[in-house]
View 1 (tube, rainbow, N blue to C red):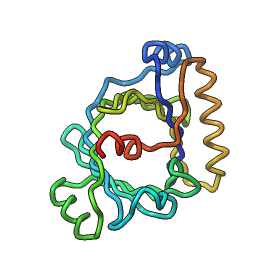
View 2: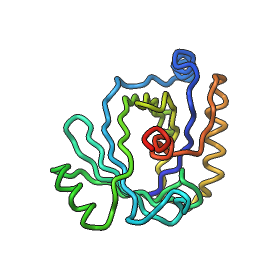
View 3: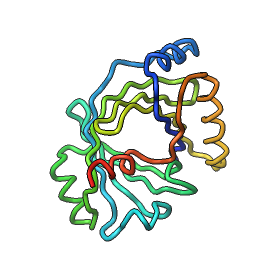
View 4: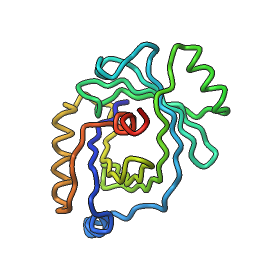
Length: 178
């Protein structure tokens, strides 16, 4: 599967919530997510992300998910694999044994919803601010950058103050934790 997404810094949460509701989208109740990001051993940010496989351990509602993401055309278009793991600490140990290094911890409150095939996430990220993510999960060969342009057009039709960013949460958190 591929995940294609766009991300936006949100200036006015209430205005965004009202615009989403006007578009017929109601977000679910918030959930708490605790993510640990991992990079391949020896990887540095100046190398870029394309072609490298990164990992994440997420805990939400006492469920642990192991995810790998390999950026393709850009950091917001990734080949992705995800599975539930029984024991977060054992999964952490396995990632270390495979040569991954912990990078940043990302803690957030997330609300989700759907508009057709578009997944919508409203995230309040500790130390980084409030963001909206739009995502498509696809199993076809559609052009990722064209799909991102379509997601961006959807976001702009909301008519609220959104600042698009190409940074992933681990990149956004790096300056705060450096």
